Image 1 (cartoon, one colour):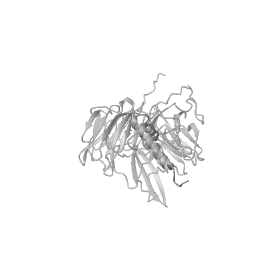
Image 2 (cartoon, rainbow, N blue to C red; image 1 turned 135 degrees about the vertical axis):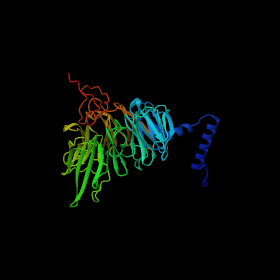
Image 3 (cartoon, rainbow, N blue to C red; image 1 turned 180 degrees about the horizontal axis):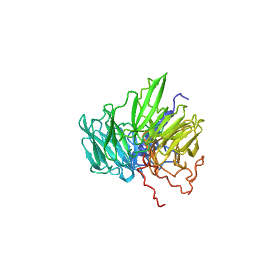
Image 4 (cartoon, one colour; image 1 turned 90 degrees about the horizontal axis):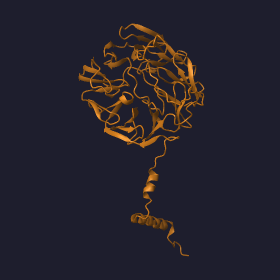
Length: 477
C-alpha cells in the first residue's frame, strides 16, 4: 500500500469541522452555544452551594450588607446587588464608598479621590439622598455619619449627621485636619483590629460610633464628644508617649527604653477633667517596634477593649474605660479576635479554639481546629477559617451553635443578620445562616440551643463604657 494514502487524522478532523459548520449554518444543528456555556460555566465556590453566585467586574475591595442590598466597592466603581437574588440593582463610578447606618436605615457614601465632596445614596435604588461639595473626609458608623470640611488649612469644621438626615446633628471646630484625612474612614487614634487570612478586615460592617473620638492634628490629639460635638481635650503627647481614645478615656501609653528592654505604663484619663481614672504597668500593647521603643502603631483591640501582653508573656484583654482585666489567657494561648463582650482564643496545643465571655472567666464554647485557624467577631456571628481542608465556619458567638459550615477556599467578605457574603476572585456568593450544619447542636463541643429553634442570633451590641446605650432595669422587677 502506498505510504500516505487516505485522509489521515487531520483530514478527518477538518472534514468533521466542515460538516458541523455546514449544519450550524443551515440551522439543522448548532452545538456552539452549548459548548460556550460549558466553557463559561461557573463552578460553585463552596459546598454546600451558596444561595446565589455572581461574577462581578473586578476583584472587590470591600463588600457590605446594607439592608436588602449588598454593596460592592471596586477600584473605580461601586455597585449594589440584591441580597435575595444577587442581581445588580445599580452601578456608579466612584473611587471610594462606605456604608453608614444599619438595616433599612443604611445609606452609601461615595466619592472620588483628591476631589472634595461626596454623595449619600439609597442602597437599594442608588438614588442620591444628599450631596455635599466641600467635605474632605467622611467617617461612617451604624448610627452616625461624620464629615470634615476646611475653609483654610487651619479652619475646619466637623459635622455629625444621622445616616438619613438632611441637617447636621452638631458641628465642631477643628484647627485643621491631618494630611492623611482623605476619602472614607481615615485613621483616627483608636484601636486596630486583629487580622487574619481569608477574612476581610471590614467583614463586620460599620460599628456604632464610640462616645469619644481622637483626631490627630499637627502632632496633637483633639478629643471630641460624639454626643454633643464638644472638643474636650487638645493634648500633645509626651516624648515617650502615644495617645489613644478608647472606651471613653484618653489613654497615655508610655514606652521607656532601659537595660535593653521596653517598659510600658498605661494611664486612662477622664477627657473632661484630665484626672487619672486608672493606671496599669507592664502591659505591652504592641504599639512599639524594637528600635528604641518608638511607638508607631495603635494598640490592638476593638470597641472598648485593648489586647496586650503581660510581663509573663500571657495575652490579656483590658477594659479601656476602667482598666479592668477582662481576660487573662493561659500560657501559650493566643487571642484571635475580640469585641467588648467575647474573645476567641486558640489553645496552646493549637487543637482547639474557644469562645470566652469577657469579665467572667467563662468559656462559652469549644471547637476542635487546626494551628492555622483564623477568627473574627461580628455583631451576628463568629467566623472561623480552617486550612487543609479549607473551610469557613460561622458560629453564634454566645453559644457556639453552627450557623454555616462551608467547604471552600473563598474569603469571608461580609456578615449580616441572616447570612454572609463570601468571595473568590471575581466570584461572590451569599450563604444563608441555618442552611448548613445542625442548627440545634454544635456537634464539636459547642453549647446546644436550649429551645432548639435554630434561629439566627441577634446582634451583640455594646452598652457603652458607662452603660449609656442600654435601658436601665425596671426597679420594680
